[in-house]
Image (cartoon, rainbow, N blue to C red; front, side):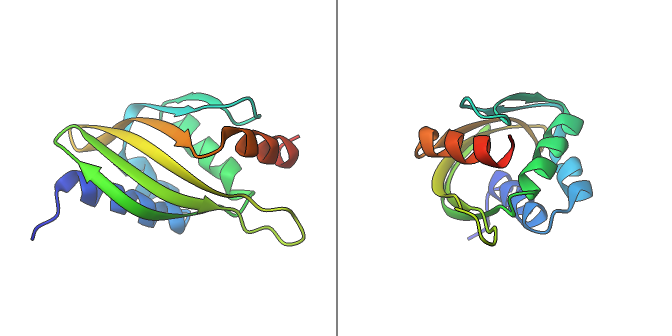
Length: 132
């Protein structure tokens, strides 16, 4: 069975993210992307545009973050994925959390993303400590 093009796009994103390939990520994102990060930690807020999103990912890289998709649903305009995300810092308390992302796809690019963490309080505490 052939994969839906929006699922292929999200898999391409996760592949580029896992290798910190910012050029590939930049090609996948719409120029005016909106990436919504909930919470009260230093990285929370809406990132507007490719440059802001890539800067956010570089900040995440400090935590040696990984993501492993668990389940993905799709239609012609949206993808929803649930994945495990974790940090891998030596000698530090690491984050190990589930998140669901709602991806809006327009013209074959990621146009908007809403992040829904399993436990926002744990995420807020972790990022507040890491990014004082």
